[in-house]
Length: 274
Length: 324
Figure 1 (cartoon, each protein chain N blue to C red):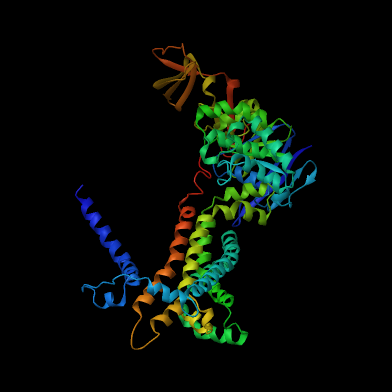
Figure 2 (figure 1 turned 180 degrees about the vertical axis):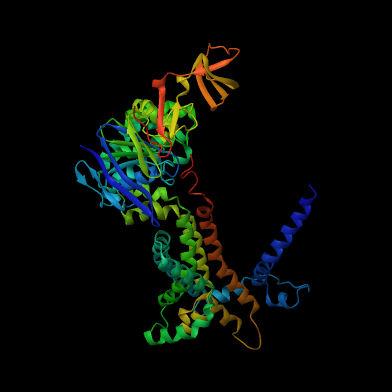
């Protein structure tokens, strides 16, 4: 019983530590500039929607960046899953030296700091004329996401009882049917969490987006926000920046809330045990 | 028309886990494959189903060599120990999936699923998920799925080992009736000799990947081909006497009789089975088990003997049965 208040206190501390900056951003985004400079003064106009108005009516308007990021994020996620799912399946089902080597390489690749690659990638983009194409960004993003995605998905495939696939095979289901009707539906929770991680990466990625895109109507969120923050060397538009941050977080929060259900639901419960 | 295994063998890492397996199972016959765990009985089923490849020998179904046919095309109905029902699909969808993939028209699919659910008495469970069913019900769904496959051969891999003893006893006749309905060869794998005796027409005893003996239950019990079979089949277990001049004698517990002048024994323990009882005895030949009627009282001095024709004699080195 004594541990309860301590635990509550710890939870409160943890929550304020992780949510504090977000709430501060939210507060900032609705505050007038005067209120931000003199937080304790008694001002008539403390609250405002002007920051949002400025951000949304800018040129190009902010929702443009949101859409750009959504396109890049969705495209990267789909491309990643389309490649990683069969790759993960193959790695789980085949044995031998090549598979072992491939798995080790994947772990090495997953640990490799990708920022070291971006200059080389820029050269590649230049010679292939991939600059200033939104969907071209999905190629490096999907590639960089492969190691993690394959590791997560192959763990999910490995967790499936082998009897299930054998039973499907005896039912006359070929490889494609087995994946389509049995295996992919059963690893849906792992697919959902992988998708979120890939989407988050694409949503937040900065160096590649910064170097591959220069057309201001094609920018993704992180690059666009950096431009807002650094738009003037004399003053930082805190309010507008905060408003952009809030707007940029909404899709992510929505995504997690939507996918949470499929992550939580234990799809494999009762699969084999009597 | 039958299932024929010719000299079947499988090797893993250079070691034969199954070797020289010859079996023929007729249509409408149920053969039980028994043996200790790891003796190769499940491997045999998996090779017949095409889930594992044979390294030697061949499999013929109805005269067609299927040794290199893919599992997908082999037309076997298998019931797994784990049932292996698809957890994300309802009972009806579990049954329908195979039909759908094999190109059966929707109306016919529904009709056949309804029929088979009726057969296994699960009509009202059609829309439920496997997780909502009891162990016995899941087992029946797995069986229904095998039935819908219209298989040439039925393979049952310990289909009842996850069920409790009472349910097993209840389901046994039903299971036998259902799988033998369309007169196909049935292989029933179990580690339980009692279950094998109860359900099978013939029993094959496997030891270390090789067949020790194939015979009907009575033959197996009365004339075990080796000491291993004698010990494996029959409960309470057969009494094995210490070897004498290269010969091991074994006597069934019910063959022991109380007789003055026999071997003197001491009663260690009495087990009541209801209609009969088992006496655990100690003697100069080691511990003995004796199966006697329930009305038998314990005499002051226990002396047991047996008729010479009740004696099973085995070669002490090879364990093989000695004739005459």
